[in-house]
Picture (tube, rainbow, N blue to C red):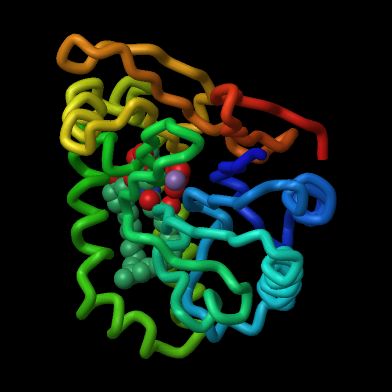
Length: 240
Ligand code: LP5
Ligand code: MN
């Protein structure tokens, strides 16, 4: 009995080793699980489900294969792939979840989310996020020709890299108050998230209760997952 959580795989055609590592994970590790939760940034960037990039079809087929083996897969959007839509969900068999979800797993009350919403000190990012989450703006963007959407995404990525280079590490980490509030509000014992690429398990106190926060690692040089079993919660790393 185990439920797996991953995030920040950042799949793209230019990184075949990451793709190979992810496909191996889906073939070997994931079929043994009760369920797989992908907590955002599965893809490096997503500009619409109609993008004919062959990698997307390959990943959809591999996820569908997992689904057909009886392992449900759930997805929470990240800040890179918040436009993953119903068409890709159908193709991959993934269930799209809202941005926050509370699970009751083997007696543990676990809150899951991508992690970007907790970075409240990053005021510029939160402003940017509100803009690109505007449904009207998203509809207009998705109506643009694919080439133009890819160009906008590349510009946004470059702008983001430039702006990140002048931000401090503290600003780009989660805000402790935001963590406490969201855990308190959801009465969660555990929080599992990604986004910050700072894998760790933190223990903290929320209103006098000891709780924990597991941060998933990004799949740069190796894979990373959180495994929840009746015995507890583990943060694991494995080679591609
Ligand atoms: O992603 P990462 O790790 O580099 O940084 C994130 C935050 N940045 C983002 C931006 C994404 O990388 C862009 C992804 C685009 C993919 C899909 C396109 C769909 C467009 C849909 C439109 C409706 O999320 C970064 C955080 C960091 O995490 C840590 O939390 O700091 O935030 C920013 O960099 C935001 C900036 O502070 C402000 C915005 C700069 C953008 C400038 C763009 C200029 C060019 C515009 C051309 C149209
Ligand atoms: Mn992210």
